[in-house]
Image (cartoon, rainbow, N blue to C red; front, top):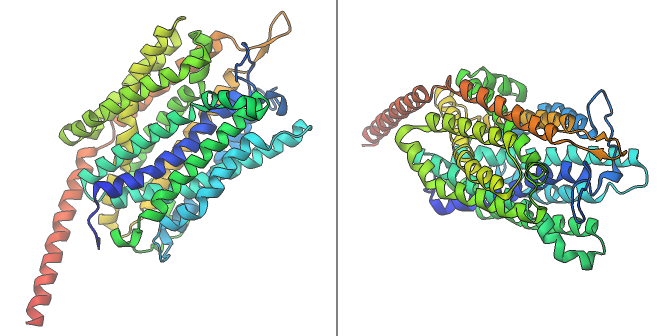
Length: 478
């Protein structure tokens, strides 16, 4: 049973951890492809800054190095995600089922993120390819070890619908803050260039500073929240892959995951290509891209209270579907955009709307399904539910990286220069538009009313049973 009431202060402390891991994730998702592939077109441009260190030409058919890495990485995740989730669900550490994992992995997670951009500097390109492959596998593994137990706490700390929507709102806020901060790498690197001696080293130092901030943020909830004081969790006995199979047998969870995979595929295409869309399609200088990120973030944050309030009044499903359609419109505008800063502003303002919606509400949906499963079976496998969702996220991200790097492979022009055409970037945006529309259609099949109705009925039944038991015990003692 819950020992202490879960307050908003506890939920905010918890949300700081999301800031940390989203900052590390943002560094890799935003800058990995940008720095290691492509060609700089202007002095000071960071596109392709580290490209000389790794293989650039397609390795297999049209698949690039990063396309293959992400494909293999998802197979790796297919094994590690359920194993870590099961390990966490079964854990019975003194500090709880979740927090000990977060404490142990925060520092290795941050160090590996830095290593991805620092270590591949050998004279052998093949050796660099191998090094970056190993480092990215470790990065994804460590992210799983931190995020899977962390995400399971969303359901456990979100013990009521109010707390569930609140914690989803808070972690969405910190996620955006972390991701937005990651886009500041070039801005932070600029003043460091004189000390670092080169633009490359300045970028690496900036990444190191960001990773340190992220590490501290991840450690805050790990050491300030005493899990056992708030959550009376019991280890589960179901084996890892049996638990995973049970999770995907849940019809409502499958309906949610189908659309979630597509959401992450589309939004990762957008995030991965955002810097290129702004600088190549819209002709916006790299120095002005952060301004657009700030606009997008501010719009999203302003809408948080609106999304939070509407979710309680009309439910999450309708709002999430609206978010899908809005993102589709954003991607379509990107595909059709012209030159000029005004296009960047239009994208930033319109993208802030679905960012607020889809940053908050999907986690609460997973928590709903997880709670219903716990009430129906008596077995709390929230770690596995969120691991399955994380796996869906990574599958969508992996596929998007595969598509993005394949569609935007540089070609040699008549002058012998490597170039990526505008039409290639626009094709990426069209693909994101189409897939996001499919995600919206699929989410219509998610039955939110049925899930919440069953939860309320089972809670009432459990409450009556507990009261009956207490009455019986009191009578017997008398």
